Amino acid sequence: MNNAIVLTNGLLTSPDAKTAHGLIRGTERFTIIGVVDCAQTAGKDAGELLDGKKRAIPVFENFETAIAQLSNANYLVIGVATVGGRLPGNMLEVVIKAINAGLNIVNGLHEYLNEKPEVVALAKTKGVELIDVRKPKTREQLHFWTGEIFKVTAPIVAVIGMDCAMGKRTTARMLKQSCEANGINGQMIYTGQTGWLQGGKYGFVFDSTLNDFVSGELENAIVTCWKDTLTDIIFLEGQSSLRNPSGPCGIELLISGNAKHVVLLFAPKRKYFDNDEHWGVIPPVETEIEIIEKLGSKVIAVAINTELCTNEEAYAYQKQYEQKLNIPVLLPIQEGVDKIIPTLKDLIK
Image 1: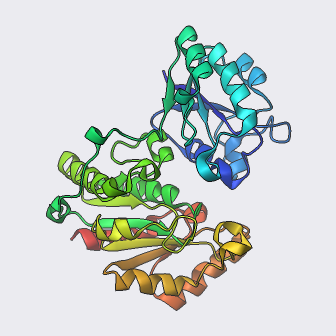
Image 2: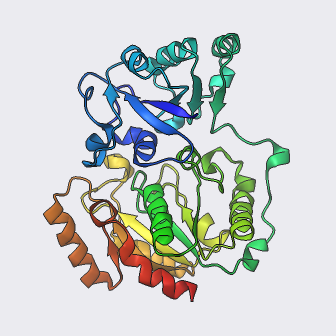
Image 3: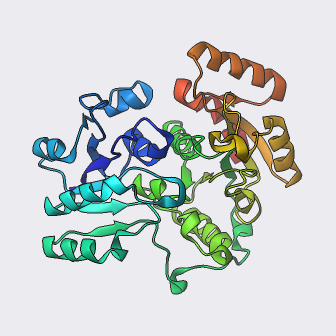
């Protein structure tokens, strides 16, 4: 029984709660039975707050109210991914309350609960587990790149974006699910803590891996997945973006991961990297496609993050970019990703 309460403490409707957003949309590792957020969102359905889809996941103002109604909970999952991976100060108090209530704690931040002696001591007293998902592997557990990736015959598709918090993981997961619904054996390689929280079997946490071993961990995940599942196609979850100055990422997927195909996400109404003016303007999507193709991979579709868009604007952007780019343009939230299935079938052939 993995019944989990997700903790967001007032951040549920912000981009910082993207871990919670992923869990609300779906996870095979936990059953999400509630969210602890704040007075403004309490009493509402978390799914409706996220994307207008009711998912029977109630939102509570505080932990006390939640645990009084959700006595079958046995996990508290910290549902935020903050800049720098720091634990917001007001969350530690809730974590302690949850430990006292007998809940195991799952933490996807860089600030590890297992490095807080008072928390470790309390957890030991209460007989609960502290799971720091982002804690680095030991040297003995890490893999170095070998070149075995070139033996993989299944098409490898990188799902990358023009910025952070674009929906890369969500889109990769939707592509896998769409393949399953259409009789295709599609598998996903997760590269972040939320992918593991959602039940991912193959992958690693990119930003907790020593740089020397990133390419090897990626290769090992892909090769192991391919051998284990005999998959028809593999989707790689991207991180950050090629040109986000705070943490550029993505070339590893194209070069070390040998992803010769790309689904590229962008948000037409987002002007600056991380919505921060001094970080710089996000370049046009056409220039990103040019870079990707110069690296030897082909963009087979783009997907639009429709933040701040009305439905009418979303479909107008879709039409505009299909005419401009002459490739499929996906609206994952509005209409899913089935539109790309014929393209994927052609790759598999």
